[in-house]
Image 1 (cartoon, rainbow, N blue to C red):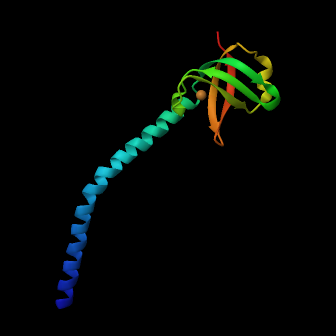
Image 2: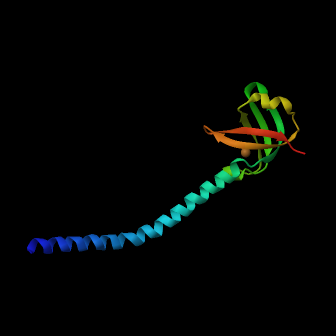
Amino acid sequence: MNHQKKSTSAHQRAISAVVITCPLLCAILPAWADHHEGGHGTANAQVSEKVHAEIRRIDAENGKITLKHEALTQFNMGAMTMVFRVEDPSLLTSFSVGDKVRFVPAKKNGQFVVQSMEKAD
Ligand SMILES: [Cu+2]
């Protein structure tokens, strides 16, 4: 009898601990889940989005291109002129400085790269 009474009160303590913890978790987790899901949805939707730019410099030898690009929302970057790496330098042979292009930017190993590019009208 004595033993059973002890274990009952231990059980009640466990329940009250859960009751206290639950509102805390419920307050934190949905906010985290929303943010997490939203971030992924945004990134996926914009990976294949083409960005308008104008070619300022082509360095085919080093696989680099300087683009004056419009805002890159997926990288929180405003419009600017900057250097991108080009994974396939043969991509550059069909372009000239001054061309208006649409390109797909990506970030690989901390560097911005042009994944694909085409002439814009
Ligand atoms: Cu930039």
